Length: 283
Image (cartoon, rainbow, N blue to C red):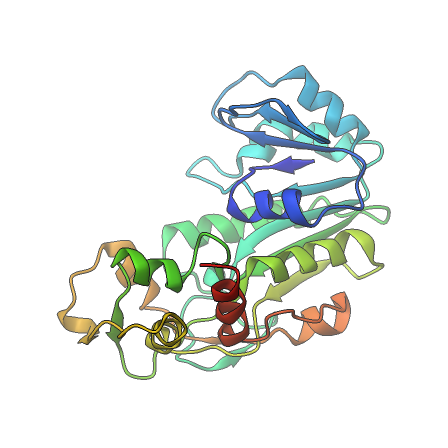
């Protein structure tokens, strides 16, 4: 079962979850209801109605991936289906996709899963609360994994495409770094939770090298053989409040537990391998 078939969960469903004979996934307004072994059903956490096929899928499912984000009213899945998820007779593994944004700002320091969580915006506070709700569903027979994802890139979402469409920028904020992860490596981590005997709990899912964002754009420009956009000082660049909030958090996030306990060997340990592969694929 997948709640919220967005970019990451959609990649996992299409490219990675070969271990499962059948996948039921939800979107608010799906355009199709079935494709190969994927059954796509409607689900809206703001609606009182729940498709009976979804309830049947929950009763049959043995693995649950939750990608739907929370809102002011909390987690949309648990708001409507907490009792059904808790009572699902065959459900052995739950994976909840969260964000490293729950840590807030740590002044560029290295942190791991034991770091203090000080979310600096409403979105991250909602995520942190939803994490705990899902972790509370763990039992002796059911493991719950919270994967805190860093900045996601991959096919259709990367600096190469931004350079091509003219939206790439090189904002310079001294000492600023961002953490990132290729969507294929997220899929690896999800599979590791479902298919291996790893302990439940919280895992950071990020690559090996937090890096200044302008370095990624410069490297991508080199792959395309084009000049990178000019450097612009952060303070002089018009940004939306959400964009500016990203630059208000600076941290280097460790993936040691993911490697140790989940056994994930990154296909793209830094942005350089990831961008080079995307360029070779035509992006």
